[in-house]
Length: 310
Length: 273
Image (cartoon, each protein chain N blue to C red):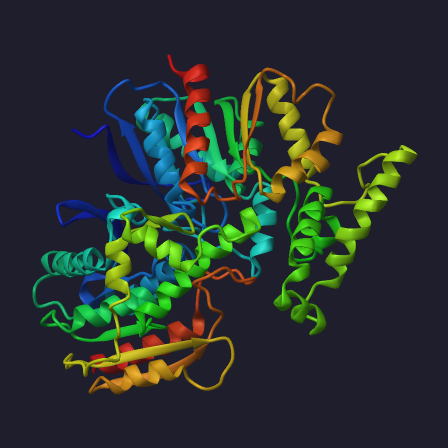
């Protein structure tokens, strides 16, 4: 006997566009809180290497109904995305492009299943959508975010200008490793190397040491930080909503979180018992290897069981 | 027009698909769309969705579906191999015929590995009207090398070294352990079956019209392997279109492939006359 019933669903958003999704309903131990898995970006309700299918199966095995859906213009849903460059799509997601669709999804579940308590979950763009929605909708109890971005992407921004110290250190290590590789020298001598990044990785870390000695603040005044993140995060905590944030050890998003968000955050907010932060060692942004997926799923299940199983 | 998400039976499991139907009074035929492998499927998803909508606008039905262990279909990715994917395509064909009638004018369209699979199915499946191959993979071993390279790149990015080289990865497969490509686990049967594919080795028996599309960033010499593949068919048109390689991550946001759509639809309409 199967542990869940799975069915394709369709519902309308606030613009009357039809959105598509897959609903997982556990057959036993049904909880009165539903989990929404929010689109990570371009990839649809399935997510890279079916990560959302694996997450949905795991969460529904705990008793949570789970909805994975495609917002407007993605996957099988109606509508179109009006950008020509992917970075601009990510930027608009980071500013809340899919918040209203997430509200529509909660409205639909409320009507369909009679559930009005939600945990919003997602990788990358899905995590920031969950945070921005959770800050403004009282039905949201918590955010479960994987690799949440704290910056704003855009095709107008030179992202190398806002690179973090963590990324520069990683690059410096990589360049040092390649010093004895002939193909790396060939790239260097044939102008294929990004000289600006190479120089930055060696000299900016030195400048950083000098900055620390001189006591200068470590936040650049003009950077690509998403101020909506700070507002929404603070709002979630002030409303007693729980947040589990899981980062990947090899992911630039963790160094951005540390270097761009933490210096701006209210003192003690991260140490608050509502906030649960983990790093999966070595993992990359999309948790490619199965051992990283397992660690992430174990952490997620533990948090859900401890906080939300009735 | 309508779009219905649904499940159909394939090898005793539930395969997920979306059936696009045009207005009933003007249905000229139907297409089964066969997607590429792994992450390529996700990058091309929206281009497939919009192509199905274009087909419906012109009076053609289409079924987009997920192979077992892919997307929203049942099963584990690691249990899927080339044979299971071929069986899924046959199940999709059977489903469309059951739903739209045995006399439906049915054709296949596949991209990348999906194109390879379509070419193989068309050799054995009777009654198909035509075949469209978007940038098909001709050489199984060469594609397997690409998949190994993805694994090696991930190792290098994460560990800054290659802990298991290609030879060790093959040994791992041979010992019955899966290897990871972009998060998808592949196993020995998949490896063995993929590396035995050579679409050029025999003359094709498929009697219907075939369109092969070489997708290239810039106009230029057509991929010679696709020219050779074209020569194995009796009635084949080989076209080159300028599009980004949208089956992988590109800077441009790709939800439509207008040049590819235009040339394919032109061919489809022409061959229905």
